[in-house]
Image 1 (cartoon, rainbow, N blue to C red):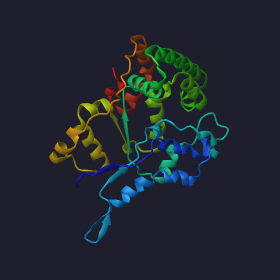
Image 2 (cartoon, rainbow, N blue to C red; image 1 turned 45 degrees about the horizontal axis):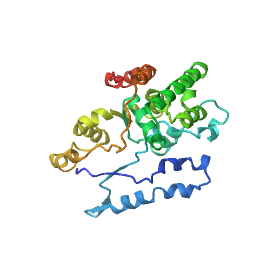
Image 3 (cartoon, rainbow, N blue to C red; image 1 turned 90 degrees about the vertical axis):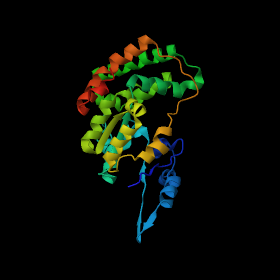
Image 4 (cartoon, rainbow, N blue to C red; image 1 turned 120 degrees about the horizontal axis):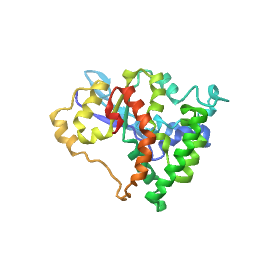
Length: 276
């Protein structure tokens, strides 16, 4: 089987459109229209072979926020009046595609947070000191919440997240991978979820992609594929040079995320996810 993998097209704010019923006045048709271009691409690739029509491409939605950002869960009928969600986007996805293959690429949580901060605030002349102040504030608020309510309630607390985000551009909860992965594993079978490290991917893309292809039922990468595409692919980095993270900030984050990294490594039976 020849590899032909194509991402669904999403406009720059496409992942935000799923909140239409909570945060805007868009109709359901407005939401559906976000995927029009992806549908056109998919329909254009239908192949007729021996009188049978089939689709030779693998399509996927690469919206990373689906993993952790379930804001608006409070308006789901089953969740009304609850401190934390009984039902999330995960349950909705499973009801539509119970056999979905889910691929999660995770980055060192400290680096992910710093890069996200810099990307979101790069036009505001922020500094490494600003990042440090934001991290201090966010860690304090989340620790207070964890002590009072427990981890899960706080990970889904929209007001808590918005407070730190609007003040300091800090998305601390996003790097608590194990907390969100627990909910995905509860709904989907573990064999339907593949977790890889982004660091491994950028070191050896062929091995990482072969894991993914095996996971979704494709043959390994051919020598032609390696020569024509894999080795030519370059990582995309922002041209805006970000400052170095302060050592004291890195230590703060390393200490904060350490127990969640241990949980993740235990869940996956893989110490590489300790990032130590």
